Amino acid sequence: MSKKEELQKLKEEVESCSRCALHLSRTQAVFGMGNPESRILFVGEAPGYYEDLQGLPFVGQAGKLLDKLLGEIGFSRKEIYIANVLKCRPPKNRDPLPQEIEICKPYLLKQIEIIQPSLVCTLGRFALHLLYGKKIPISKFHGKVLPGDIFTIYPLFHPAAALHQPALYTPLREDFLNLAKILKELKSTPPVEKKPTQITLF
Image (tube, rainbow, N blue to C red; front, side, top):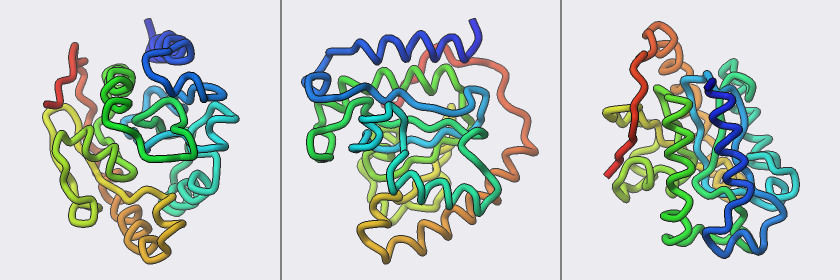
């Protein structure tokens, strides 16, 4: 089965998921989108209003900013893959609850297992804390490479945070410019051929 087929199968499972109460208020689940062969995965927090309506990640104002920042370093959505920690929108865009993250975590880990990214760019603290396994301050670790056994983590401020706090825009843009250098090095490094059978982050 190809990566595309595996992701489609998982997507269908997510779309019928009723493991937590968020399925009661969602318009539709937001699985993820992009190139399943990409070595770069962006992971955000949760769907917002427009994502819930369209069933696609990062289609609101934060998504437009993400597209702009990607464009500045010569990338588009077609070349990467984007997913979220939660697959359903929390009511009124509130923060994800710990139990919601725990229930939804296997879907994200399965996406990572299928895509096999070399670099995971976490957008915001929720994705960083989940995938790094420790609650480290994003204000201190943004723009720093955090090596891992299976993939490298590159923490970034969430684009929505930069929209609400303009002071974060400059460091976010600088981190993206630095990301361009990291991706250039990544392109010169052959991908790991061995597919992990299980991802354990804790």
